[in-house]
Length: 170
Ligand SMILES: Nc1ncnc2c1ncn2[C@@H]1O[C@H](COP(=O)(O)OP(=O)(O)OP(=O)(O)O)[C@@H](O)[C@H]1O
Ligand SMILES: O=C(O)C1=C[C@@H](O)[C@@H](O)[C@H](O)C1
Ligand SMILES: [Mg+2]
Image (cartoon, rainbow, N blue to C red; front, side):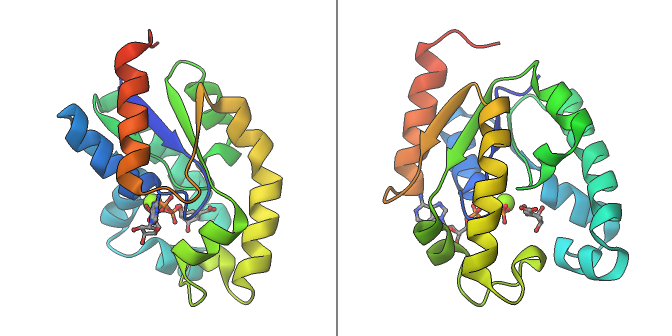
């Protein structure tokens, strides 16, 4: 079972904090976006363009199930992984950290010229809508919420590492 699963929107820092946290804990990181891209032989962005979001979500649900079943380290999920019923049910058995981020920091981090498929056209507006729509879903699956605004990724990783080693986990 993973030591911890990171969830949150694009720009929350799941991949970046995940790598720093894994290194602090002496564990490996598994990032489901990377698993999906490696299996498909193309980027997540290209999968969205070529096969569409519905196909991506189906592949993502299976990639998440595999990572949760197989990986003993840190697992970073894609920003929309929690939209799948199956994933939310599986997450009930896990230690799940929600990396919270506000609109301003998320926009700065993903960049206004973001190539992320769901942000095309209007990065700030799309991020604001996604954060509002999804915040209750992230909160519902999280066992711990960590605010990342105006903090370095390493500071966030340190807080999570301390929380994991000082509280009883699932
Ligand atoms: N706490 C932070 N402070 C400043 N920059 C950060 C922080 N966390 C991440 N970043 C930067 O923000 C960008 C996005 O981070 P990252 O790719 O880790 O986000 P993500 O949550 O994995 O997003 P996605 O859902 O798109 O995979 C990266 O350039 C990263 O270096
Ligand atoms: O928030 C989202 O829906 C996404 C986040 C990324 O991690 C990728 O999984 C993809 O760009 C979709
Ligand atoms: Mg990521």
